[in-house]
Amino acid sequence: MSQSIGTRRQLSAMSLPAVLFTVVLIAFPFAYTLWMSLHDFTFGGASMMNYGKNYLLMLGDTEFWNGLKITLILYVLSLVLQLVLGTYVAILLHTSKKLSGIVRTLMISPFVLPPVVVGMMWLVVLDPSIGAANWILQSVGLPKSDWLASPMWVIPTVAFIDTWQWTPYVALIVLGGLQSLPPNVYEAAQIDGASRWKTFWRITLPLLMPTIVTAAILRSVDLLRFFDIIYITTQGGPGNASNTLNIYGFRKGFEFFEIGYASALMVTLSAIVLGAVMVLTQTRKRVAW
Image (cartoon, rainbow, N blue to C red; front, side, top):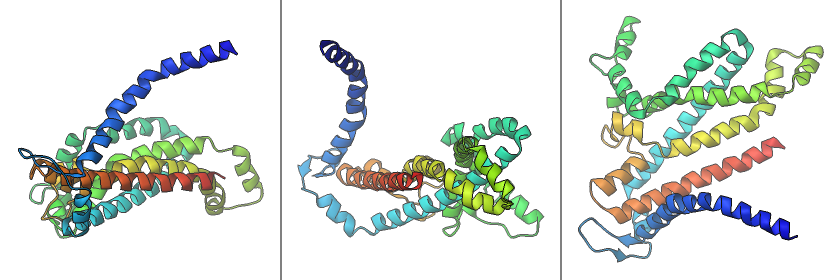
């Protein structure tokens, strides 16, 4: 009994640095942001408790609702594209094993590039005057596009940039799931004469669903707090066409110095991220059964 207690104390002592790290670098900043969201505070002024007034102001803030709409549209569009294309690429790599090693190595490069590099690269490619994208469109007889300067096309374009960067990441996750599937199930399906489509739809996809949902969870956390590429390419423009909650909160905090209201925006966004992750986690448990 004493040996068991001593082991527990040793384990507790070993885990103490990790617990302190979590509290200092994660829990404390979030708690402080939550505290600031309950205050009226601007740089150079006094901080006054307003007991949740910032959250009530959001309900009548048209920019908040516009940012929330843009955030959710960008999230859904990017996530669907990345899951569908990532699954397709993973299946291609899984079936053609000769190229999988080379292609897998090349696929790593987009999502390890710094966001600044990705943003600047696509700014050049999508430039309305000298960009390669419009040159390709004109070469095939199609009209030029303003891409990031168009209120109609800016969100699909940003979603495309993010999909270009992160689809390989999803593909590698799904590829790992494909390689872990039991081969005897496919042998039985082949003996029964099942077509490729039926095999995919009734065997591969159900068995692969927990892996796909895991990829959705990982990408959801990043997509809902999408900031860097948007700020580098559009800074929320043209107008407010790509002004997500992250960009809006950044502007409120560091351009207008409304720290209390910006904190409330970020707490709200954190709650949305947590809610999405909880829903997807429960979904993963159900599909895993």
